[in-house]
Length: 165
Image (cartoon, rainbow, N blue to C red):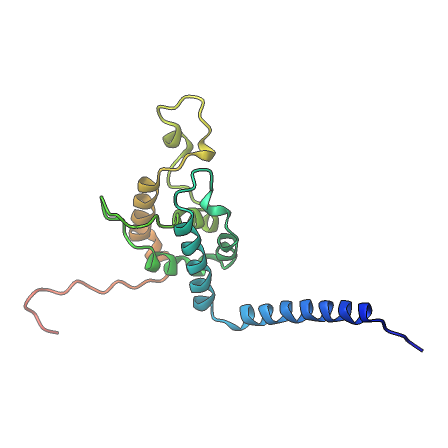
C-alpha cells in the first residue's frame, strides 16, 4: 500500500503544474497563426529595446524574441518590412529595434561589409560595430529591388493622373 506524505503531494503538484504550463504555452504557440506569433514576438522585442535604449553594453539581438522571430523563417520577411517604419532624420522617437539583424540571420545576407564597418578604424573588430542608418538604407533598397518580387508582393501599377479606371 502506498503512503503519500504532504511533501510527496506537493512535489506531484509542482510537476503537474509545470507540465500543464508547458502544454498551455505549446498550445498557444502551435494554434496561433504565423502573423499572430510574429506580432507577439515583435511587440515583446520592441518593448524591450525601448526600455533598454540607453544601455551602452547591451546587444539588442540577444533577446529571446529575436531567436523566436528567426525560427519563423523567411515567411515573416514581408511582415518585417510592413512593421519597420522608415527612419526620419532628426526624429526624437525611441530607438527602434535593429530589424536588419533579424533579416541577416534569416536570409544569410549582409548589407554592410566588415570592411565598411571598420573603415578608418584599423584593427577594430567588426562584430561589435553597427551602422544603423546604412544597414536600414541598404535593406530597404534590397526590399524594393528584389525582396518584394522574391516574396510575392504585388505592386499596383502606377495610375495616370486624371484618368479614371
